[in-house]
Image (cartoon, rainbow, N blue to C red):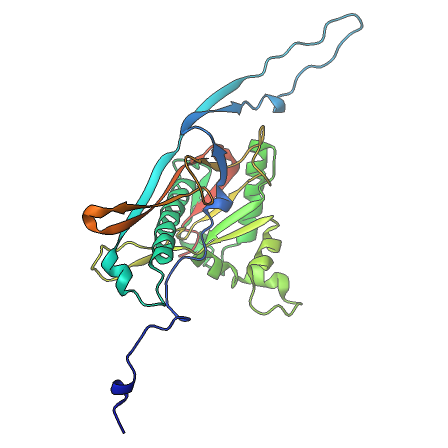
Length: 311
């Protein structure tokens, strides 16, 4: 019998390949994208005059009480974000059928830009100097202490804090994946389902327990190791929990924790500009992906942040 290596030359399978990518990006659900026509501009901020008690009594023949309401502005700047990769002709010519270098390159570049955007949104939304209604948990107050903590009570209490600030009850809760793992096992929460047969609690169960419209799990990861060093993966949303308000759809005269101001300059695919051009000096095609956005908190009092929610 001939050796197997003499009758079969190893080739990449055309229907099987392995790729690692984040499937749990939530940046768009926390800071909703707002398409803008200019890279930088102003937006209006209405005061809270609509909550002020006004004397509206009017006697016959008298004039109505004349009031004033105020308006201010803030600005955004949609910074450009772009990555590129050259595809040498030699690489394209040698690629097996299982590899589509153009598609793989484009998807990799897009994933990396999505990753950086997720990091930026998380960084802003969980910054105690930006979202100033916050509590840094430690020891027995952390929700991983099943004997002493009560995450349901903690969140219900802060719902009132937010509603008193913006006139709307918060409707969204985002937790880092480590927080989610502890919440689904917490006796206070599990007790709510003791007469049911749901098994392991799922996100929809926690959504119902906390009575929010949106229960988001920050499960995306980042590798903070330098290239060539051993991998060091961390959860982008860490061990934080963020209770906040987001409108069903962005619009005028509505409050929201934050937005992504997305400049659609040249965009041709879901807000991205994807282009390919020839670089003859390198005998290669270059694929470039770019995105313009500013991830910004626009109403910090529309949220409450717990840092180090679990140990």
